[in-house]
Amino acid sequence: MTAQEIYEGLKSLGYPVAYSHFAEGDVPQPPYIVYSFSGTDNFSADGIVYHQITEVDIELYTMKKDLEAEGKIENWMTENELFYEKSEYYIESERMLQVNFETEV
Image (cartoon, rainbow, N blue to C red):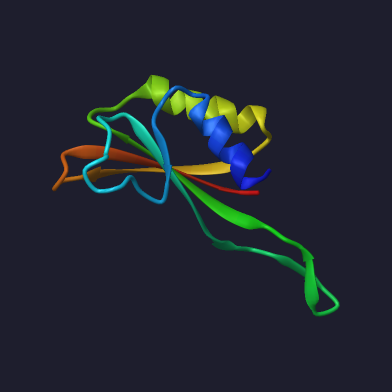
């Protein structure tokens, strides 16, 4: 899956989406999604990269628990055959909930 396909897929869920972060002063009201490519977990053979694997972090920011928004992301990832791990954090300083989806493409 390409970077453009990830962006378009997340955008199709109906929430504002940005790579890495929104510009200062341009942060939308939650819920919104931020995604980034956090690294690689490549498979090697004969000393070279045989299969390139990119790690992707998708973060959902909400003011309160939003099962509908989480479900949309989960369904999109499942439909696109993306295995994911999910974690959740409360950001005290922002009074926001952050739900992280980690996957590889």
